[in-house]
Length: 347
Length: 252
Image 1 (cartoon, rainbow over the protein chains, first blue to last red):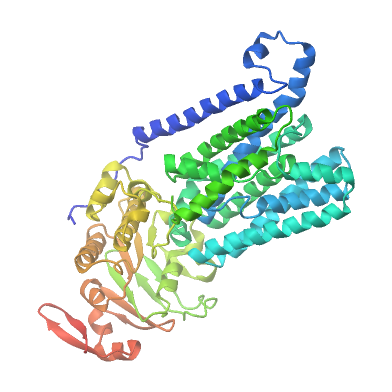
Image 2 (image 1 turned 120 degrees about the vertical axis):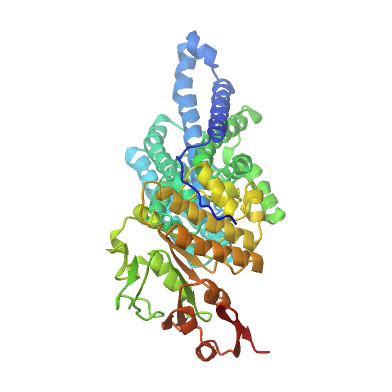
């Protein structure tokens, strides 16, 4: 080692990295816009962007598109971005690439609370609607706190095992709770619950979309603002603290934002599985583990994947449609198994 | 620079109160048997366990009075490596706590002999290589904050930085720490297992046992064969080295 010591210089982001960043985010944005254009035009109610701009559309078609398709597209973007973004953030928080809102039981916890609410207060008015959101948030928050409390008590491989087992337990519990509710529910509620439980954007109307539009973007913003701190946390808690991180505050904010976002998403669209695992994992292989790039890219990628998957779910079995949650689980389940089979935790 | 005063440590039953200070320009080694409280002491000095610290002061201010960001500019910690599940490139990892600029980073990377590993993923490195990466990261953190300051180089806390290094790397690491203390006027506090490293490179030694500091002072005073025999339950023999601290060898 040399005797001379370094002189300190200016703090600059290397141009190469900046270009890469803009390139990745720009590419994902363009892909998302194309997917939206395709999803807007596809299916039985579709209107292509050209028709929309030219305006030579029968008023009836336009009305239907506006009332049914547009909120569905918006919801696809919001829910996809939120689920994938919260997956990436939770993985950063737990310093573990297997953390995911579905696997850890956040989604099913939120789902159970929403189901309880729907059965107990079978109203379709605004009270019932907003109650669903509150119930979803509380369910997700409860599970998040529980899982995080459990994870903190173990280190290393023990923590991973604890996390996944806790998720398993919560998922099982929520499943049992759902079964119990099925006894109590009326026929109509039962149908509503089972459709919603599979995860679908098919029932999106403006009411729910507007609520999501108000609540989801702030949650996304909180996560984006803390991306640099999530990077620091990867050093381990003591080292990150010594490097200037207020770890408790970060944890609180990320837990609150993901719980709020996931709770809202589950309340509007049911459980759409594996987006939070699949999207960040693929993007990490491409862009590296830094959250400053990974978080926004995951949000764009999640929105892209969900808009495409929802479009496919609509056209694959026309005129019927399959729940999109089924489709993402069909994709995500095998991918998760592949991750486990490959054995190494890193990526 | 860093001072500990009596009392205030009562919340941590494993450690008894102790009194002492660390000044810029010196290397302080903390030694002791397994479970003596060395790592606990280090995390308390870094302020990580701030609710239990009581009156530990840095630059005359209680650690609790510092904001995390300001404190990060004055002291850095090299903990024992905690694996993150993600495969960071070495070059990206070393600037996580602060980026002192490309030239300074390149210099630190070169000092720690990481140049040929800079593009590798950290999960593919050996334990010793990871230790050097984490030391480089701490140096980058302090260098980034030091930009406008003409005062001392800050406080560097290290938890067994040589535990996975070969003897050549151990020597170069300890020489580097000495040089940082002298040339950069840093205060270096280093938990060490190897008593000979402490005897050879430290200015002062604290000997811990069962949560208490049982001796402190110059290495030659603290690392006496009889005392070590009691503390570690070990049979040692001091071999004379010309012009240096005696070599502590295990009796066969």
